[in-house]
Amino acid sequence: MNRREALSRVGLILGGTVIGAEFFLSGCKSGSSVNTDDLFSKETAAYLNEVGETILPATATPGAKAANVGDFMAVMVRDCYTPEDQKVFKKGVSDLEDASKKKFNKGFMEADAKQRTELLTALDKEAKEYNSKKKPEEPNHYFAMMKQLTLLGFFTSEVGATKALRYLPVPGKYDGNYPYKKGDKAWALS
Image (tube, rainbow, N blue to C red; front, side, top):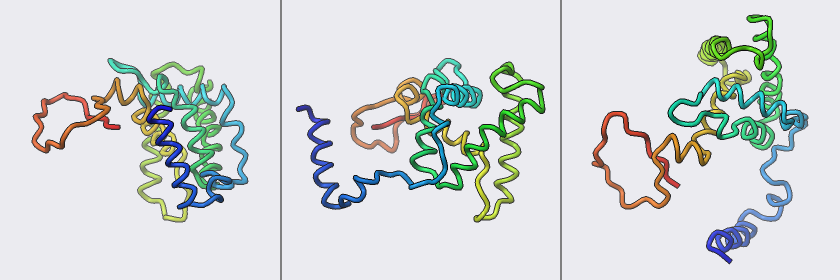
């Protein structure tokens, strides 16, 4: 048995006594009545990967598609979002497609990189305006959720933490006066 297995078993034993059996039976699912199965199709994951890649494209470092943010988004929406946000996100996928067809007479996947960027820039502006006037009881904007999930999925992935950030698997002591040079990558600690 390696260290990781030992820690997970100890966590299971201690977690079971602290949290109780109900947590392990239900998991972290919200008990949603929204059918999110279609978010797990290969086509939808590929679509969300392309949306993510437009938000965070590959440059000198890998882009969002390399971190497979499409699958990440689907899992997060299914397991962690409220039923209301699940509905908004699910409808948002088709709304984004409709917006592309309206603006360019073609779907998002058929649009070129410049058109995709133009569309998502407009949606980002729309989401910011919506969120600035949004009341607490109103639903979130679908594009804001897509953008947040793209960034979270990328920077918490292995490729994001090791290629886009400076990765230090076992950090040393804290040094609040560590020299910083302009252009240095941020740190990713585990």
